Image (cartoon, rainbow over all chains, first blue to last red; front, top):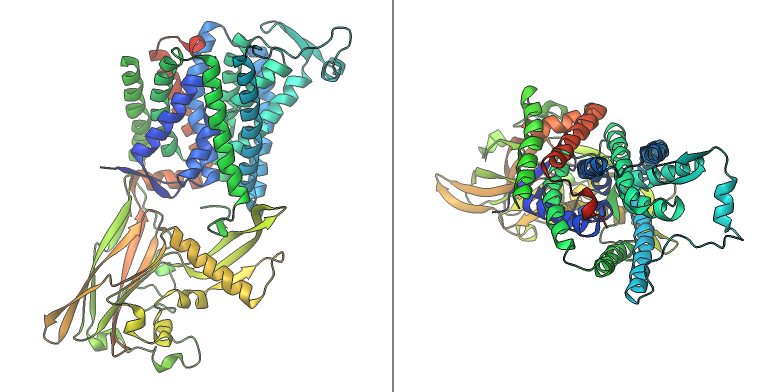
Length: 310
Length: 310
């Protein structure tokens, strides 16, 4: 018994247990590692035969459910810097809208799927390598890397750059003061990536908040989820309205699996060491990256691919 | 695990129920792509312009057929309409026909013709990427050729070509337009047409099944032909032409034609229509249901948001 579900937008049928299982695995990883899972979900959807543009857009829809649940929990705990979140959000909206139109233009030129794969390879490669090195360093006893170290007497180039930016304002919840332009620009960058990759941007946003905006960790996760939620709402609407690539039925089935998987993962995570988990995640991320890299390097089985709609 | 059960139950009930209720609230459309009278020559019971009409000098020698009624061949399809619903995976249409005794049987199933733009993959900077666009016209969206024995044993290559058996006829009728970035040699055109057929085979939309028809004596100078047409989930909606041809001593002597309707129905048709014609509304509804799911889960589960994040 292997019931299938016909996906109206993807134009194909997919095994329901396979989709639920996929959602479960990504949800499990999400619960284990505290990541959104979107950066893994889209490549996995592509691997099971969902068109890349549909996979990326649908993933945004699925993340709306996952991140709203998490953001709600953090809001009740008082872990969201609403002011910082809103500034990042404005940048994310502009970037997300621009990213969706960029995808539309590239689809017309036939390069959208290539852009998605290249962006994935670069982002997964960067994040996976960084996490791997950071975890190995921590396991060897050097301890996790803390905030960027800077000689108080000789500020780094980055410090001098952000201090030179105008329109400085205080973010009391995070205990930082900086130009409003910095989170705006960083939000814009994450918004563009979210639209191209079909991810909420959490795995990019968290390092950005910790290392570039220097926010305290307990506020970072809640604010990131808050930001991811609204970015994905925007991207889902834009993709549905502009590219018609959101497959809602696919998103619902994935949600069922991922919510259950996240609960199991959260329980498992308390029994494992954090650095071991980080190394496992880093290896997983790098494996996905290598698989996608091969698709750019090895001769494809088919030299023709659908262009535009499906 | 009780929480997990609650979440699963909520998602199972709330999300699909919301969409199904939307589907029920509106008249369920039937999307069949081009209707029978929109398809060139697709009127049930008659041959289309592509089927058997001689296209090349000398084609009339063996390719021209007498009309079906003159030879008394008959064809029956069960069912005559394939409905793609929510749980559609693959449809099966039983074929039964009557041919004169001593004939070999061939069945051709053709979908409506399409013009489709495909991205052409090539190597640039040592990476495989889309390097141009190939537009294929006068190619059927769906093609199946079922025979009672190998085509080569049934008739001569020229006759098979004129009768429409095999991919050579599809490649001959196909009109290819390459964009200006790609070399336009005769060899290149032939290769890209062959690549298009290969792509269609890989997606399950083109197939040749030699030996898939069973022929048995039916008495009174006739024989009975039986077979099965598989309609995969990827098959586009529309009016498909089904033609049974009888070959005697390598020459086509009988034929009968029927029309097969393939269409999206119910919730699938509703979602497809909504997504394509009212994309923004579809996007907003998808977001609202995802938000309801996420916030619903957040409301029923214990507040653990901060604990599960690393």
